[in-house]
Length: 477
Image 1 (cartoon, rainbow, N blue to C red):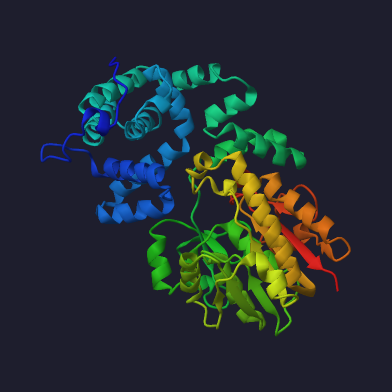
Image 2 (tube, rainbow, N blue to C red):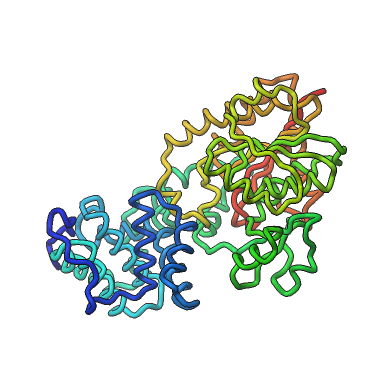
């Protein structure tokens, strides 16, 4: 095969952009553009892909193909990198990043789809010609031809045989960083469920179902007849049977919206922790982008309470205002530093939702690129912020008030560790409520929960939700 390294245009000279005779199927081009944007500018695939599909005016079949190619490649990137390194005879960090994106996309087509080998190779070579150097086309052709000579199972066996440990084997097979595998193992071990680790990793690589929330009191289940089936657990939503959820959201004026069932349960755990007393004042401390805030606002309106939403980042605060527009209530959106609320608003709120900024390791099904962006050092940095926020939130609670601490991460340092530190710091002034009992009481069917009664960890493999962590804390009267 070619000995070219797939050098960048600066090294080998980029060919002119697409000619009339050039052809790359639109779905593949869209997938490549999104994958490249994720790498180059930290774009979010779930936000960018629909925009690119619309811009390219893809039909239903091509849109489905672009979606599969994008998410499939991003999910299995770690595994494909090992295959590519083997086929190329060099580490992937020695390959030009743009060409590496082409190779990853080509490897996914060869090893995980029914795309014909000649189509996967030829169009990948054409992509390489357009985004890389002239010499890179031969390199791309050689690597992908080498990959195509072995079956997916043969590559799997080869990659796993080269793993250095059990965790490395799991990381390779299920395409997760080793540190994430270890973090998941530790969290499951605390529940006595370590044997579920492989099932969890596999669930992270499965396309999630589309859940919709029905804002309570503003819409009803009759509005959703024929659109899907009720959620497994959340009483305020349903699983979409098919079709475009964007049109449903627009047609309903935002009263129906896409929201993971775990997110619905997190908000409801706070709003339904106890009966609402009219006049209560609620706070969503870190409200962006506004999905949980909209659900809380509807719940507050129904119970005679009022809600304040806070979001420090102006762009995200704008998203919160947009999300709240569907609720016919006055919900102020503040743009204040959440870590200052204990000092600036002491004892003002009866209920507070702290959906803390986190690594997002619980939503890897929906944002597969997050597994490659985050590093262990990010956990330490976020833990400091989470500790500051939970301390401020407890300070802003009225005596007898309830705080829901929520993260979309199962990492112990972001979940149980933060709560344990807060309880120690506020010893005698704050107590943990039986979150599991509250959640079971509002759920449509029984949840298989494990772990300490003062907290709940939801899982994609066990509950079909994002891996949401929920703990209720009460400020003693």
